[in-house]
Length: 356
Image 1 (cartoon, rainbow, N blue to C red):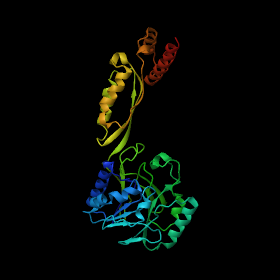
Image 2: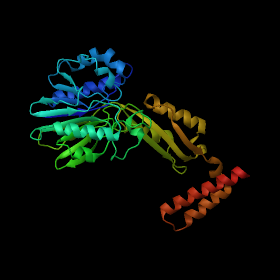
Image 3: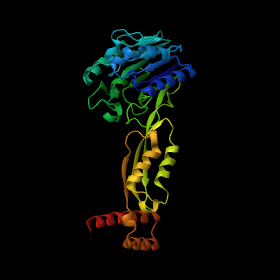
Image 4: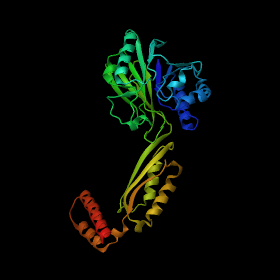
């Protein structure tokens, strides 16, 4: 038995990279001969998209024999109530009272509801009381694990509102082998529920917002083995910070270009260029450097570059500062110490020049 677990695709009509991610997940499932493809909430970005895009979803899943199980999430839960048809091998968990029994597994789910923590804890206990302890039980959940160290930035664009918040201890008391969850976009994370029992967030399989940085992943479960985090070649955002050094003779644009070559071509770059540089030696004013950065990054740049750099040629060309550097070079200090002293000296000279 093989199970592929993902969540938070947020399919819509304007972001083709999300459909490309779905196609990659389905192709991976076919290669791995997956029996169950589980989507733990927010397959669609909004309720209306389940209505307008379900034909496209059926086409994406049509050529594969695996069973697809969808759990309604907070973004799309209203859309499943009317019994929309998503495909012959697609099952939507619309009730928490009965499991889907599949090849010796009981797949339970909590369709999204506006439940606070106390109500959710009670609901989970009710679900647990219905589970057959002799069977292998899996629970799909779309909500917030309060034991996890994350911020509201890690769950998409939800603001500060709580969505089905629960503690790990509540799940630990249930007779489940896995809690396979969604709603946490940031990255793949797992927690122990007990001996050989796990709670897993796979993270979003494609970056939905600029806060979801780094390569995306999916969760693959093979019977009698630990779950595997499988890296995906899907669209994602990557943070890149370039620190400039006024004593480095290399052109900053060449440095940035070299860094970009090391990042996967599917990634969009969240670029920060910071520090000090010698504009006279490099022949670059601050405006020319800013323009050059945008040209070098081109279409790979995600939004505006964060420009936190300063041309300090007026300090480096000062005769008194040059004399100070000559004296510092003759001193028997460790190299890291000299670097720190130069930084402090530049800072001091900038203050003096600003006030003179």
